[in-house]
Length: 316
Image (cartoon, rainbow, N blue to C red):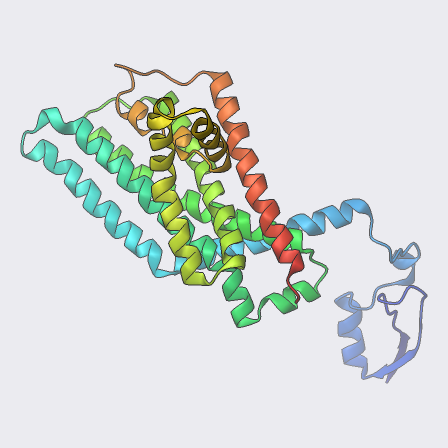
């Protein structure tokens, strides 16, 4: 039998005691460095440093986001997206097959529109079910029992949904680029990357909005309102702009108020400019992109703040 000291590193003050084990087990433990020698732990500090806390928060954010992304890839929505992309690329190829050389822009516009709508709907469904499912399956309680704040939890979920949305968008854009290159079209790379950038901001707005709706309403109601908002917000802003000059002063003030109260999703849509790039449109200037970015970040922060406010008021 071997008698040797063992240090408990969970306790701030060193504690030694005698542990009796067979000689072979003791030698294996010593070789594996299971028993840590006293000089290594002489400067043991049970209080974590600020840098260690930041690294732990970033690690928690990444684990939460990674879990959402992997789950989204494993679900059936991804396979539906792949099927739609195959159908779209087949439709684009038929343009050249039937000799309809003058309709490439039409099919290119249809492809971008359908891809944008499909990605937005996927983001709405994915974001709306994140929090209700956590409460329904009671998986949120062990997460909150760990040293993870509610803000970190929501940020991890948000980045996970955004990564899944970017994955879907990238999949669609690969189909779009394949069809455009097959038809021998020139890709306006500058405007195309601006289109992708603004689409990501739009998806972030939809994700945070659906987080908030999922805390206010049931899952089905949150998805329904999210889809209605996405499909009607642009139309509503367009109608306001059309009837603004026909209204009286009071109605104009109300229209201005509603215009600032509801996010204008049209500013994030560069589909028309991307389709007609080179002939009618060039890349958007830097100051305009900066203004649109700040506008989108404002709405992302506003909806995320509302989500955090309602989430903190909810008892766990």
